[in-house]
Image 1 (cartoon, rainbow, N blue to C red):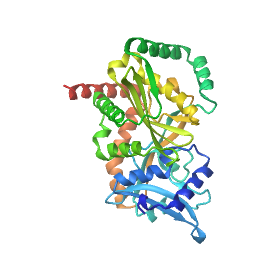
Image 2: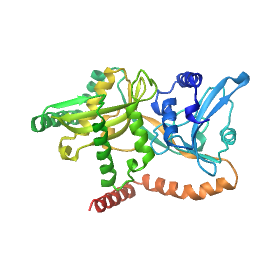
Image 3: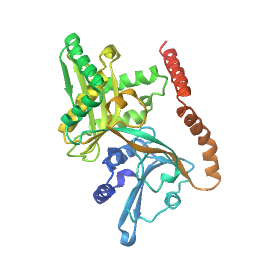
Image 4: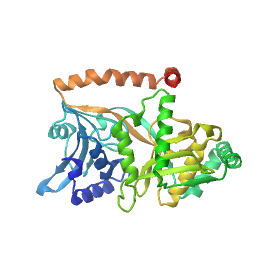
Length: 358
């Protein structure tokens, strides 16, 4: 069915199954995210798995291409993927794909513990997390002990920012649409600067973000609400972040900052303030998302694991899928796993970004 056709009973059962899984309540795995993607992606579908007596045994959100190629719902921006199934579902990956008329299902952030598709993951990656389950004070104490220089430098830069640009003020849940527009402009500029594809140039992504930002009241959408956080210096935004939260997890999604303030590291200041406010709001985990970055290494307390790959049913279309996707995937993997080559690639991307801005 289309995601918008899920009724109240489906939503309740989806939540029950997620609770039974014992996995962190990642908002990308909640029905609200699937329904939001369904509003902007015409190929979005949800397979409802029924057992004996029509008891619902699970849900499989996906997007379907014209030739039966499948992909994770929101692939390209979703940071946690996989079906939501009862432990006793009894399915195989091929059976599920066949029932959905899919020749393949591609994923790049398969959730840890997703046993149905785990054998099809060709690579696994760390997804850094920041555990604030014991409160922000406990996290700060551990950060001071483990990375004293980092903490001192960041807080000193925050004080200097206040002295030179005006009072530093943080808003955890900013409602001003202008602040979201500013964040998206910063992020687009960052993509261009680093030679990467601008995600917000894709209409479905920018529309998805705006819709999730507009519908972000936690009481109304407990599993997946948009949260826009902004660090101000005086009356001017210095850094901002838009992410998704459940009751207990904040998935960090789109952080960016004003490059005029770069010397003050406003993005790091923002993340510390965000962790403090999130802990106060009952959130126990910040998921920083897959991908290496110095600020993630400095802030994290541990890692989750996510998988990348594709489940492919045998047949001629499967061969076409492999011809079209596997060479690119293997090339990316080859470069990614060789630090020197990865450094060359990043410098090349930066050069492309500089050429774009001329």
